[in-house]
Image (cartoon, rainbow, N blue to C red; front, side, top):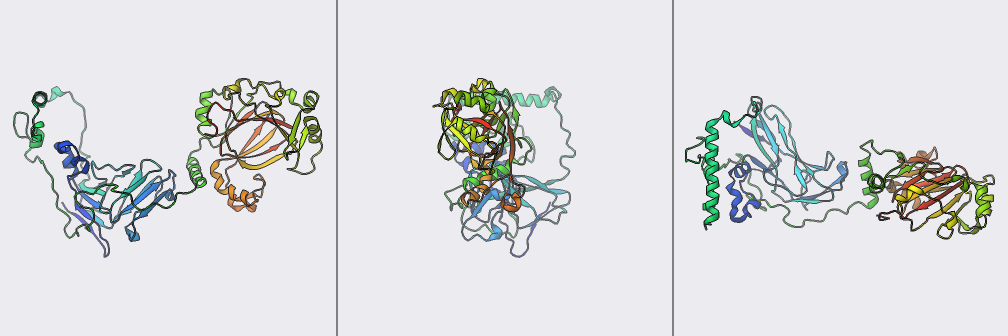
Length: 511
């Protein structure tokens, strides 16, 4: 059986016969982990490819290759450093060698057995190296986001060994009763009884010598009665190194490459919060689920909490306000509460009656129609009766009343907390953008150039907003819209509109 690694000038794979030793096994009391012969044989059952450099990597949880950041130690040649190629929290080593096995043999490539690494896992592969004129890559994948992983120079990055390609083809797996193999049953039960007796003896008379604390039947390759097992039983495995391979450069000892031995160089600064949100938004876009604002009714508090409040996703609660909505019509408000003191959107004092008269005049300038607001804590007679909606609210703060003329609107701005918008009269159209769009919207706000997000020529006027994720919602009398913290909201009243905003949820707000 041949296993050859062909190299071009300048290719310097760091290959070695795998060591049976592991640092965690060395650290076990009395090195008892080495009493498990299958572990030691597996540890040495192949060859290891060592990392040509030290580096650390970080994954922010996003699906794109750039969501993994890699910082190689100073002085590392570019061709030696791993790269992020495939996304989904993976990073890749290019293997500087073209492997060839004897005909009919594959090459198994994966991580070193019994050598776990916190926060990442080696991906395994089987390659037909008896004919393929290609190199391969070794890939690792993060198992959790927000974790910095460190590899030292000469730390194993891949473990490989050949195996016959048709090895599994002739296997006939089955389950059978033990009575089909009476001799095997006898030998097993003999061993089981001997093991129970041995453990009882050790417990009754502790031995000082570590070697006296464990039976060595399997290690020695014998039955419980001393009869030999397989003639080619192995209690150790020491493979030869690759002929012509240069020894690994000095640094980390070849027999024991520790993991994360200390803090390495700092990673580049993390992206700001808006960029992280944008990446998470792109991750969410991989699924069609929850790609619109759902219209629901009769949600229990628990379902609302789990599916919307805690998930930071808006929902329209249709027809939830149990109220005689006719009392919010303009003339009804004037006749019952015309003298109620309120202020307009510019802070000017007014009364509800005067505002209604002004609001019902023909619009003269789109976006400039009057809006009136007032705290319902000082106007208790104007507070709506919310019925079942109180299952979501504490009732400590009756909220803020808003009266808007037809055509009155607001430009997009992020919600500073979770809000419930209650529509009592008229219709309002709202447009919602998720928090991840802040990376594109916020610079325009700061420059005073945001404008109306619903204009037909938006992508021509603001090319950076092409493809903006925008959800349209129509609020009708009796509806309540939950707008989560961080979502951007733009609104416009379709006709004379009366609404209330509430923030007094049963749960922390903002979270």
